[in-house]
Amino acid sequence: MREKLLNAFKSHAKGHIDKHVANVEVYLANPVGIGEHSDILEAIEIEMKVVAEYHDLLEMVEKYFDQEQMLDLDEFSPN
Image (cartoon, rainbow, N blue to C red; front, side, top):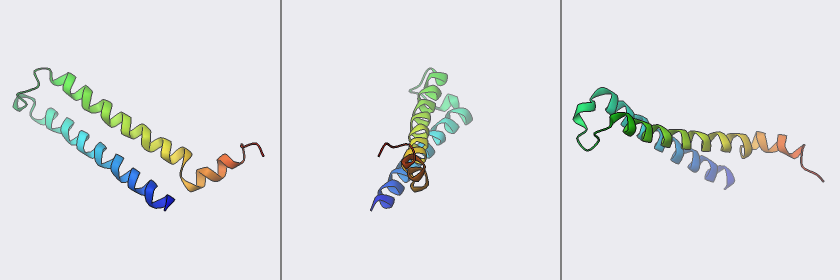
């Protein structure tokens, strides 16, 4: 169950990353076609911040919750 939940979280985060990277690509390819955003750079920055947030979450999962990493952390826990 643990592995299934971690995989689901990773898939969820990667999906959000893909979505927001695609949005940035749209802004870069056709910035005049985005009528509701008068400041294209601000819109890109917002999208990039979301990408960074999910990227950081994925790194945390890999560092602290993947099985191999859990074994390494056990070395440092007081018994």
